[in-house]
Image (cartoon, rainbow, N blue to C red):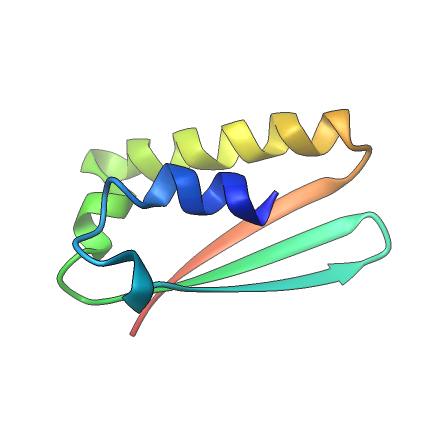
Length: 77
C-alpha cells in the first residue's frame, strides 16, 4: 500500500526522495504520515483539498479490499 501512495504522490512533487512516508499499524488500522517539503505541499493538497481527498479515497478503497482502515496525515517539513 505504501508503494501505491508513492506512485500517487510522485507526479505531484519535484523530488520524491525528499518526501518521507512513515507507516504505523495498530491491528487493522494503518496510519500514514507524509512529510512533504514546503514548496510541494500545495500541489499535494490541491485546490480546496481535492487532490489529497482523492488520494485518501483511493487508499481507503484499497484498504477495504485488504480488510483494513487507512488514515493519511500530511505534514510540512
